[in-house]
Image 1 (cartoon, rainbow, N blue to C red):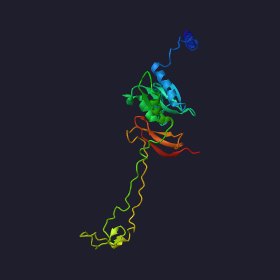
Image 2 (cartoon, one colour):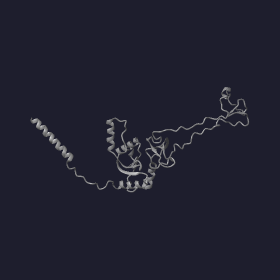
Image 3 (tube, one colour):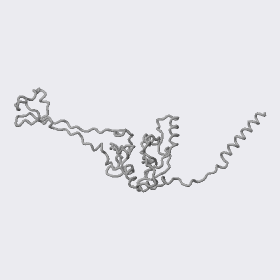
Image 4 (cartoon, rainbow, N blue to C red):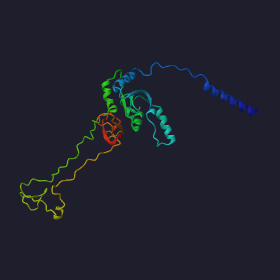
Length: 272
């Protein structure tokens, strides 16, 4: 009987402790003086001026709010990856003012050593561009606008890969100038005196297979589809041109922009 009363007493004590932790007075808190320090505030103001209403600037954004672990991971690995994301913050995130989609992450730190940062690797894997801005007391708004322009209003004028000249085929590269001697198409007939030079004997059967004008088939360049930047081997991210002559066209751009300015159009378009 005594054991029963002892068990009941333990339950009462446990219940009391639970109620005190749940319903008791919370710890004392205080409001912090500043959410952003002077350098962070200076960049926040400069970013707001640089985007010119084309994006919204958020600050102190947890990485788990803009990235999510792959659905291919098992439950345990997924949770572990999610916990890792919650340990990191992005100093600023630019989002689309219409649908709230993240456009670009920004961290306030030196570029040197940034490549090994977990945030850089996670954003590269997730297809989110990440820009590192060195701390400063003042920021050049025009310079920031230039850096951010490619994410806000892509011109697609940087398509160096697409601007490459296609292979030029010389349609008459077999022709030779033999004066006024008779010729058969682009191939000189056998046995014609051309100043001591003689053309090789041709098989009459093969002559019938030669096109009269000697034209070669047209060579069309094959467009390469990259998943990694062919210049720096960084992952490529798919983006949508919302304005300009290429509006509605998807394109691939390097996640290391503006350090690497590779970009290339895709065959994908927005269906209206």
